[in-house]
Length: 129
Image 1 (cartoon, one colour):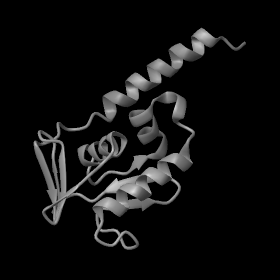
Image 2 (cartoon, rainbow, N blue to C red):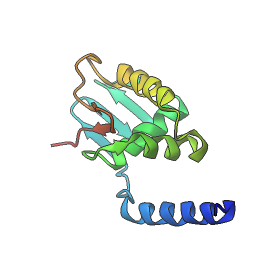
Image 3 (spheres, rainbow, N blue to C red):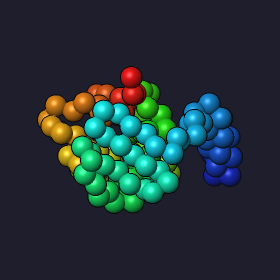
């Protein structure tokens, strides 16, 4: 028998467990990979020394990707972390945001070096070498 309160409790328990195992490392004050630099203290993103203007949502997406650099982040994880649980099915909006972010932080968005799409799963930001 379906119980809304039981379903909500199960959701919260699963969310708690997933957060315990996916806690990001603390972001360094500055993240840099090749020509891309993210200064978290100043909330400043630069590409080849020029400022890249990001919307608050784009900056939250980039922050998550930096915190998990080198790891694949699932679509649902990104959607929930940036926009909340009610938007976890809005894959098209995520694709638009990621495309826009890629145009802003990649020298050649058609051949990305930093922000990689992992087909049917999510996205990964390359880890600095």
